[in-house]
Image (cartoon, rainbow, N blue to C red; front, side, top):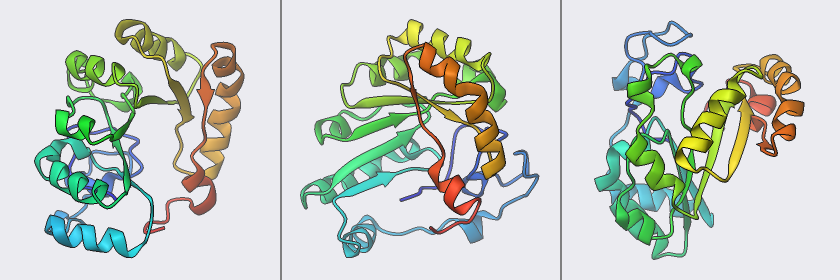
Length: 209
């Protein structure tokens, strides 16, 4: 499930239609929030999700933790029905204790300098320490080149991040493969995990899949 709105503006974001109303991302497209965003009551969202008969719902964005008040209600309704929840976040918001108590797993993707936002926007020490302290958190860093791994190491050392995954940045199959080949050996040498962008490899930039 994808929510709209984000407090960052990563230039290479692969879902700029969730937040970029001015065309500042690499696409240069000014997306229309009236076309891209759709308000729906929590109850209706729950109904839609339960129709799929899935045991796991991954909530992405945008930045989902910008909407924590509604998220708490949604998570409560879903977990009471036996659905597990994962939330993808950029690590700039401290998660609500009620989400933690509900057993939500957090997939945290702090942004490196090549994303384009200044450090004071993309690095939130209180939030990162809170998320790193949760056994249910996994950290994923989007990288382009080997030099980016030094920046990842700064995060892991500063905030005590144990579970580290590195994902190659890319908007196309060719870019993903090129960055993966550049990074993979160096990532393994550091004892970290490597993951790809499966959705990009399979569908490219196709939406709604």
